[in-house]
Structure formats: C-alpha cells, structure tokens
Length: 68
Image 1: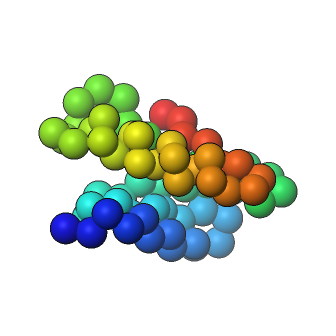
Image 2: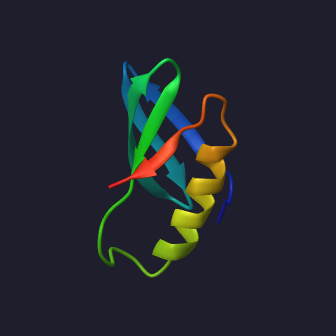
C-alpha cells in the first residue's frame, strides 16, 4: 500500500488518490484546489486519510484545502 498522494488533473478538476482511495478535487481559483472529503464513516482509515490529505493540502502555495 502506497502512502504517496497522486494527483490527476482533469480540466478544472480531477482527483487525488491516497492508499487506493480517490477524492475529487475542484479548482477554486488562482492555483488553489479543494479536496472533497466525505462526511461520516466511509471506510476504516478515514481519520488517517483526512490527516494525510490536510498535510498535503497545506504544503501547497497557494494552499489547497480539504472540505466536504
């Protein structure tokens, strides 16, 4: 299982993939993207994924963000 976050851009959107789970992304403006994160309990590693995606988003300039 890979802990690397892969980004696939598809026009103004796309997805990030982490540990074989895909999360949709949308371009918000000026290089900033929103990573859409599900509400509730979708799988057992939800908190781990949210933490990893938040760290990844905050490492970008301009910063990305994680939202539902």
